[in-house]
Amino acid sequence: MRRFSNPILNGFYPDPSAIRVGEDYYLVASSFEYFPGVPIFHSKDLVHWRQIGHVLDRASQLDLDGIRPSRGIWAPTLRYHNGVFYMITTFVDNETECRNFYVTATDPAGSWSEPVWLDDAPGIDPSLLFDDDGKVYYTGNRVPPEGQLYLKEMDIWLQELDLKSGKLIGPKTSLWRGALKVAHAQEGPHLYKVNGLYYLMIAEGGTGHTHAITIARSASPTGPYEGYKGNPILTHRHLGRGYPIVNVGHGELIETQKGDWWMVCLASRPYGGYYRNLGRETFLVPVAWEDGWPVVNPGKGIVELEGEAPDLPETPWPPAAARDDFDGPELAAGWNFIRTPRGDFWSLADHPGALRLRLKPDSVAKHENPAFVGRRQRHMSFRAATEMRFAPEKDGEKAGLVLLQNADFHYRLEYGRFDGALEIRLTERRRGEEKVLATAVFDGNALELGVEAHDQRYAFLWRKQGSSRWSTLCGEADGTLLSTDTAGGFTGAYIGMFAACEEAGSSVNYADFGWFDYEPAEI
Image 1 (cartoon, helix red, strand yellow):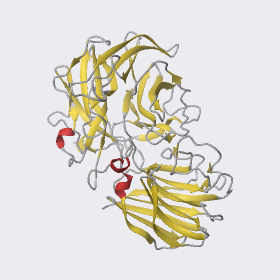
Image 2 (image 1 turned 180 degrees about the horizontal axis):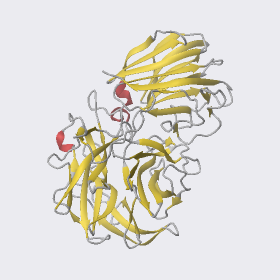
Image 3 (image 1 turned 90 degrees about the vertical axis):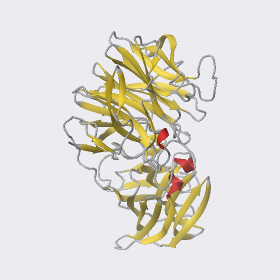
Image 4 (image 1 turned 45 degrees about the vertical axis):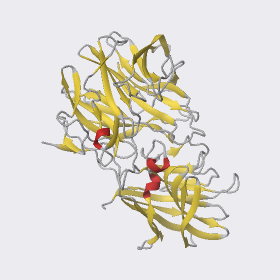
């Protein structure tokens, strides 16, 4: 009996939506303020996933200028019909105004079309059902037409989508308000047709500890819908905050080519207390059908850290290299910018074999477009390091590593010129206030910077290039700074490289990063 480990996508990959096309599986996840948007993955066995790109990889598709942390792209849904892939999602601006759109492709690796924006499509978390009669149904959530009776009460609604015109047509129909009278934040609806019946599966209870998945069914896509008496079909809210997997919700049902059913869903793994630095991750759980209803992980009803693998040929991908030497023509798929990159601030060609970041006045501490390239923290304990060549010339010029939760909560391990002196600094930014935790004198232009995390204990290191010995700048930094439970929001922690200066036009300097290492570490 083959086993698998959860999560199947560790690190910040929330709101998973997955489909099967023949014997291939594809999955997308939310990306919020990061660019490119909507990472897309491929699998043959539902356990091993390989990123094949991003759905929204052009500025014309995704304008994130000025978007605050945890706004941007929420809860994509992936669908396939008649040779075409569809990704539909919500763009949330700074005032939480929601606009819904979809893009299409014949190859899931891209390229994807320009967005088709949908008028009069309120709410978030859109999904699509391609029915047998050729009709396409849009589902989403909205404030109830008659108004909310209680805080966060939402209405799941449906309308027909005309693909030829790219418009919603016909009446809007209210479908369901969730499983319980105390339900709130009804969202993430997916409509399925199974054995002639329509199943509406949603998330409710909010994205925190009380998150849950519930389901209803009907003989018609427009209802009326009968809620399952066994709801919620999946939650961990009753297990307590000490359980190793929490805030389970936002699921997607998948039928394999062998007729077995599975669910992908989001959840978090707190550590060092109730702190979730890794954000919301993607988990896999088996499903069986009894009396016309899905039963999640029969006999247990919970998501487990290990389980029996799907009855599919095991197909692992080659493991990702621990080191990125930046020697290719493009950045690897795991790298992101904060917001849509503007200006010619990065290059892999100017210094072949290095990532060059030109200093910008835009800061990771503001809602701007900084010279930043980063990747997700994907393990509770890890080691990361980079080689940097940088000669600070003016006060305020700095570059280095940043461990980022958001603009107001992060650590910067930076080398620069401060008040006329060359210095390596560890700067903590907490609630928007900055404190220098440690400094070291260094006068050179080639060094290595590193971080080691063991649970919530973070150590920041440096050494002169060519040296075999690391110096510890700070050995006991508090990692809980990087948790959403401290910083708020919906994202997981990032690790990246940055380069900055004080004022626009004040510098033509740059930093070259020769390589970046990341690997899990044993506690």
